Image 1 (spheres, rainbow, N blue to C red):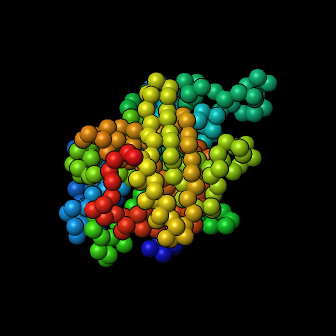
Image 2 (image 1 turned 60 degrees about the vertical axis):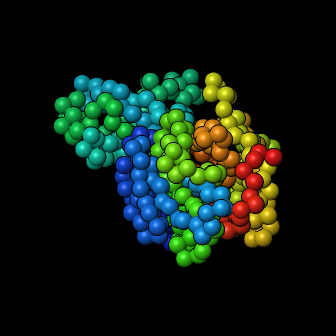
Image 3 (image 1 turned 135 degrees about the vertical axis):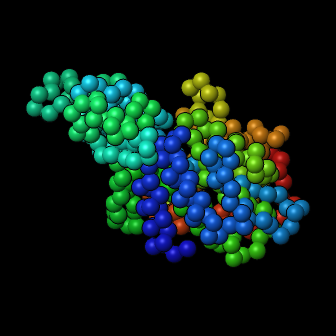
Length: 365
């Protein structure tokens, strides 16, 4: 897949509203895109989209490669009598970026309406207010409505989704900036892989999967596995780069320097879960990287996890690896990635797939 086509797909996916639990528009689009390439595409009851690419050798371990379709955002909790919306966050939303931010407000009809997080004019802010971020409970969204009745007439009720506005900018040096590159980049990589698998024989059976509710409970891939029954899995989720002035020294991942692989992640904060990469998967990735000449950037991270944390516990233990396109400013309305890294992520995963044979070890050591 050429870079311009990758860029067009990335932009389209970034713009689709798909709050965790409300992924229908994204799931339908991803399903139709995968139908162009896959032997079979199906969905499960949770809404995961699973595209099958049968291998040529049934003795070779199968693999599920997945990216989450959902995003962080908000859910409406209250509509005030004068037509403003109160919300709570869904997923890891940074409160300090919200005041004055454009959003899209969903209705029960599936329509979306423009809105903005309100804020006091700078000129009337007291000094302490200028220096702090308001908590989500103190914020409100303005859609221009004059009353609660006007809002409800649009089909907007408590429980409806709200997402960041659709932002997309092309920066210098093949870099893209905008909303929800996490994990539109992973879904774009799945299409890149699908195009190659559709025309290239491969020994391993492959299941390319768009998962739901990663940002809500990180259980979507676990449910998809119960339909795919793959022997191992790759989660396409890039590392947060540590190459900006505020993060230098936190990790060694840089934009434009290749594909990231997470050797260790651990969430803590009550979940006590994460993933430690099995050695056979890492060694195979290293061989694939050497063969393609694509650099890999290693990361070990505390405070985050992916679907792999729960998927790995299925069916007696599923070897899992987290890797993908690095980004900056994760979970903000303006994330940044490098198109070269995006391109190389797909190329490296394709080589990983092509190198799987019947001797591939599914053990941790």
